[in-house]
Amino acid sequence: MRKQGHISRTTFYRRRRETKRLGCSVDELPDNRGKCQKPVRGSRHHRWKNGLITNEGYILVRVGKSHPLADPNGYAYEHLLVWVSAGDTLKSDEVLHHINSDRQDNRWGNLQKMTRSAHNILHNENKLRDKLGRFINPAVFSMAGNGMRDQ
Image (tube, rainbow, N blue to C red; front, top):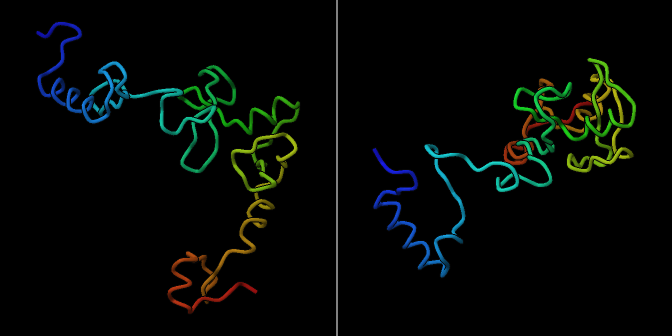
């Protein structure tokens, strides 16, 4: 059984090589841990910007698992928190639209409550479609040159 704080020879030599490359001490090395060790969390995470940034570009804020807007991990969307804190609520068929299309700009004046169908119409009216009316990827459209816009 290893003593607590003991590191393997491989890790020791890897860290020593990295300190020579960066010109710093072992304590100043960034904490880039792999799958088997404790993951980097919170403000040290690479997607952190005053909250966690989702793949879709929204900001998640830690509110705790008992919060009504929280997901199972205890995070809630910042734009929903801003809207609810202003005293308004959302029904199940309503969504919040970012007026300037910046998903990280969660000022109350930049948010607009819309029905889900009106929001889909707003975002889908300018998308490219093929001859059968299906949405197409703009990169594929420019290469193929055989799509049509919906009339």
